[in-house]
Image 1 (cartoon, helix red, strand yellow):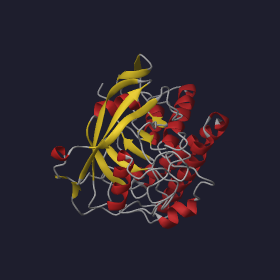
Image 2 (cartoon, one colour):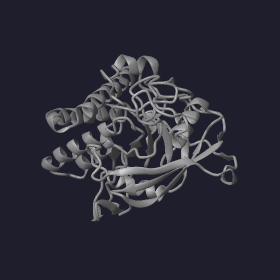
Image 3 (cartoon, one colour):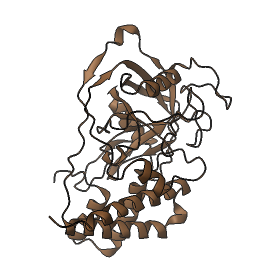
Image 4 (tube, one colour):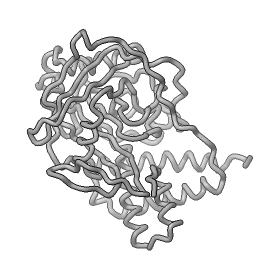
Length: 340
């Protein structure tokens, strides 16, 4: 059977319609909750998590407006990546300097290390830092060595994923620093997350960009309007996939994935190129019944996740609860509107 890419709630409903046992549904619900939460748990988590009011007030529940411009690669940078001290390959990334100039300059300078030491002490440099949070897909797999190298698709595959790095001060997702100081403001949030290879800034709420970033390994339209997209992978998605295979549902890597070297590509490779704007997923209004069913599914996922709270990273759990409440609020608002 051909593989399907399903959203967490869609898979939960699929399990129901397929006549799955209550035991399987419960396990699926918990797994989906971890995946669903992992889809959002990519911030710094400095101090208290942003409240629902913070998220909905500053960045509308409806997401970002459609981006109308052209995305042009103005700079190219690279990461050499090692896993448990074994070199696995190079990732080349193109940056959108015209659209996100401050974000791109920050990322570029952190690739070269040209800005010296951070306020915390370590160099303002990605070299030697790790990918501290790796969230893989939910799928049947085959292992080979310390990480999953080969992925076996099934008819119920969920791709939620991203790989996150950039914390060169603490290495655990609680640190990092920009070249401008601790944090800097969001730039153009209308640039959409265009699927696999999208390069975007991690944050802990509005205007909290530092040095942490993530690379998407699947479609993540729910991140639009919340994170600054500033580039894309041009070469090395096979390396990104290998990194992704080193993750767990909790986000904690099962191996040490390190940026062994990084920098700007030579001038000969710095030819500016244009690119099509990543397409946002077509938004269609659900029927009243579909929205109610999705709301019920969210409540079930939320309940199962709450029951396993002690087994989940506190930061991930907190962010998940915020995001679930945000989606529930959106659905409740839609359900109150007159049916068309």
